[in-house]
Length: 319
Image (cartoon, rainbow, N blue to C red; front, side, top):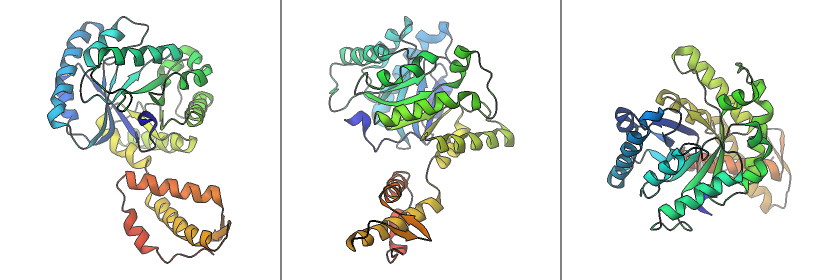
């Protein structure tokens, strides 16, 4: 269904505090696969009612002027276990430009079914079968990691998992280190569960450093490490992180060129009845060719010039 379409891309998931009118306005000038307006951690309890009202007005304004550079408009509500969750959903559910809801501190499948049911009840004018509000589940506790299979099966509206390192560290009394080894099991579990359930997104932890050369280097290392584990996106807490994250979670020019050469040659190999062949001295078989096609598809969605490369390598032959 629409919530699990393979065309959904969330390389960067940028949080914007809903309590800041300046940041709400500034967000309209950003270019990001996802902008998530936050009603949870970045908003103090006393400011939440005003933040809800400001966010609803902001979402309503997008009906006429939604920026084409923002791929998905989402809202992070407060945890279902709090009284604020229903107030958040009541404020935003019927907004025409709401694409997704980020559900924090998910304890089990019941949290997601509650949000899905509430959205249907609070926005009866929306066609929830053809145009559902997608759900993203924040995995923040040992319990959530253990229950990932059940969480992934909670509702067809679930569109991705997000790993939240800081709350997970708090739950397990861990100390976050630059190497992130303390999160290896949990991050691997999140990626594996998302893939097994056919979810389009597995979004990695926040990089808390974002200022200066050291912050940029740390961000780059985390992006490359997360992508190497299978994540296809990363949470951002500052607009300055978005360009780096979206670039590093997109295929590189070298990867795309190889993938185009591989797909061109694979068509010719298939016509010749060859199930396995070589390219640049390396064996290419069905799994490798499938990976190449996936890279080409993602490169197109990232706006890269795939057609130009296809023309350049149209004469590539299988070796």
